[in-house]
Amino acid sequence: MDFTNPNLLGASPELNSVLEKLDAAKAEILGAMDSLASEASSTFGATQNELTGLIDKLQTVEIPTLPKLNLQAEITNFASLVPGSPSAIQALAKIKTEFGGDLTARGLGLDSLVKEASAAILDGSSIGSLVPNLEKVAESILAATENPGAILQANDMSLTEALSVVKQNETLSAKLKAIGERIAKYAAAATNTALTEDTGAFTVAEEDDAITISAEGKILKGFPVGTGKNVTPAGTGFMHKGFDNYDADI
Image 1 (cartoon, rainbow, N blue to C red):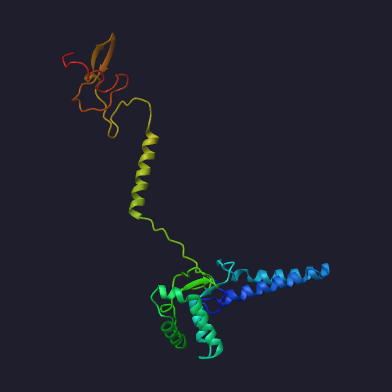
Image 2 (cartoon, rainbow, N blue to C red):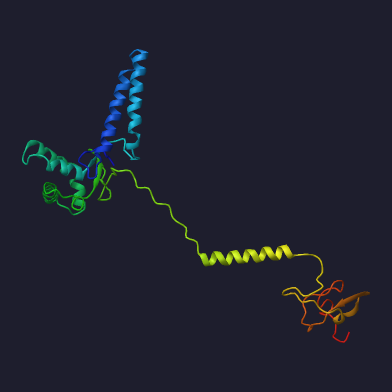
């Protein structure tokens, strides 16, 4: 998109001013190349300071290497000319030569389109909804490309987005805190020492409930199902140990 075209819808005067100053700075630097070193250095320094001041105004814009014609810009230029004047006749002929085929392919009539667009421009209205945004390289035999209808170039700096605020779920936070405290309490109370008395959900079986069995030449102690206990007393083995594979009569 050729944003330096002054008649282009949405063209930025600020950006065009920056581009013009860049061209002027380039000419000054090239002109000082053959000057004395002190004079060239002074010119370079002044130009650098001026360009540094323009950095904040520059925005990333793709500018093609070849100049392009824009139908909306050409019609805007035509509407600014005196009707019937040689310049107006020449501008209308240029539009017909460059974009006549593209408009016909889209089922649009050039005369009626120019008439409606010129009336809208003189009325201060936008022609973005009337005239397709066609672009092409001047005198090219290739068909014009159509860009989105509303082309705008920002004149102001972008707004800063407000940082998001994280709101904690107080109920969930309280539950997580309680769970964490319980886990820490259990971890602190964990021990390899066998229990000798009931503690919380752990109930210790009575020593007298243990049954001694013989299996593969070994003497084992175990507690049969139904004791209602889940922990064995110190030194008596494990709950139900050895009873899964033996008859109850043992």
